[in-house]
Image (cartoon, rainbow, N blue to C red; front, side, top):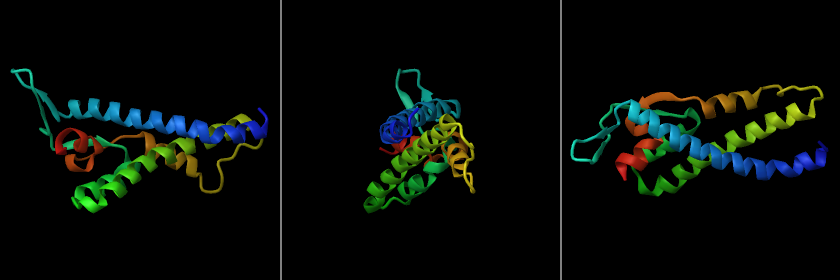
Length: 142
């Protein structure tokens, strides 16, 4: 691919991958929360939320969920911005790594290997106390 075309595709592909990352985080978090007994189907057809002591989250979104956990309503918009910024940074790291792979000349991830670190922090899941996972805020808290 031509370098100018690749450069022009960085922003659109980052936006698309960021949206896919948000969907990935939402869908997988609900499934993992159900596996952790955070969602319980009751005999009357209702679902009980928040019945687990822990939930799974992506580490890169923890700064935002920690701000949500503080409970100050003034910090809510900043917390949501940090959570969505985590998806944007993860998507950009993926686009950057793919761009370097496609250029196929002296593939090197840089001195600090930031793409690998961001991709690991943006795609793996770790168990945390329930109130520190983003899934808690769109199922239990609100």
